Length: 296
Length: 274
Image: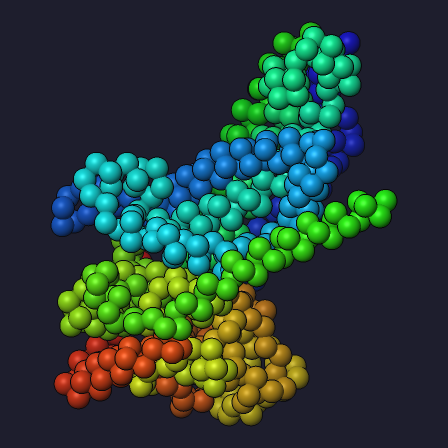
């Protein structure tokens, strides 16, 4: 019934708009070429992904690749933690116990009404670093050997940066969890009141109602906004470069200082983030389409 | 309604109280014995920033520079491994206080403001800041006074002694600050700032790399600075150990030899591309 937007024909307004855009791009390129006295040197970039070690004769990963891997690892772990905390908090938000509900509400409001950077600084310096020192996370990771060391390296990156990685990941996860809480709560509350009443009539208790009736229906509705939140988590992960987690933005900064090649480095970093986020949004669109079909 | 409000208040109070009590254990370091715990652990953790050629990343991703040689020798003399913790310059002192690493060895200049929060050792290096000016925007100047003007825009790294030097020596100029050295240089090359101020030998190297855009109007450094290790307050034993290590390595010429290698010579130039 609805027109497929990709099959619409180009009107004269589209042509004008595209021409204006192309002119704008050309003007920017012209300005960059004339005004910026800059000798482009893209040749150095591939070497920062991986290079052939002249001593061992083997290929070694370099900072851009390591930074990208750290970003991916951190996003995966932070998403998992944010999902767990967010689900628990969402259930707490709709709890019949006022104290539990208000505690969850306080958490959500506190986090959502602070700029991410401020939250991350406070959390990092006041909470996570003293706790991680108390637990001796860094010493534990350093003492690992053999297979254990390889497993930890695969899951969390270089052991000497383990404590730093964990604290950064938890900061990010607890920040995103507040948004996840609201998405899941909205999803749960969107399931009709009748479902609750019917379940109660069938003799299901609150927990089983949630698990067997409400959550399976809610998941469909929350999946699209949840993947959207995950994409913004990838982008937000660049903030933890300011607490010195060695992710993509941090390594990008280090390379640009050493090479004085600001544009090449940041354009590359931007491209990497874009590829990461865009591929995730394609996956999310497919999932959404599948659920819509299943709904019919 | 009143009931609800008091619940919020109670919850917020609870969270804040939790935050405060959790923050209290931090000053446990006040009684620490840093040297013993480094030796016991077998690893010295060193906080480093990102300033060429003090400490920076090589083409192959390794952490290299003057500070790396200093810290490596120090660790060797203590019989421990050294572990570098690359840290954003702005967050260096907070991270030290929070216990992210044992000591900052990263060309940190002694300033009274910093010294209120951390202990400094005897200086192990001395340097100063220099100004490099844009050929296009401010050609043929030969005095610092030319740059002390409301119309002049000067770029420097945020929180660095270079930024402080500009504020003190060139109070009328407009100071713009960036997080990284690369951005400071780019701002001048782009023609958005008239000059940059950074610690030597960076401005000289920049001018040599971009002779058509940058020149050094005043050869001498302004505002000499003394660089020292920074550590948490309250540990006299550690301060004594580091002080004496520095004295010994000034006397035996190690520090001067390394300084010349990184700051005078260019033998390390192939560590960075092109």
